[in-house]
Image 1 (tube, rainbow, N blue to C red):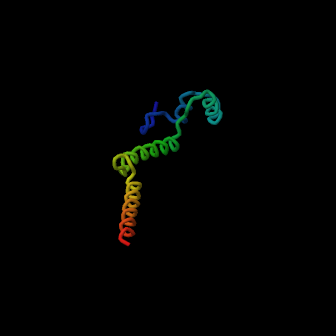
Image 2 (cartoon, helix red, strand yellow):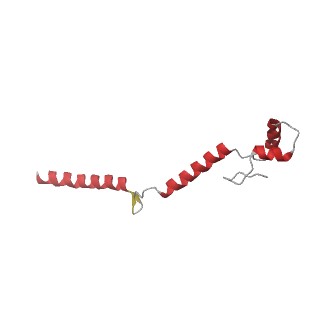
Length: 95
């Protein structure tokens, strides 16, 4: 009874050998799929788990671009518009 050391789950090939089925491997897999039994595939499962871990770690590293709940870029643009309007009024008031 050998286990996959990475995940502790038996591979499809190991399950097939333990079942002692007289069916060919391909037919046995199709029968197991029809039953609704999920057979892990190392390549697919590993890629999924790695991608999931990367996404979770990236969520923690996102920089905080907010001031008082508003995006910094929007605040900068708003400040630029206000300063521009005040400067415009000041320059044309002198004339």
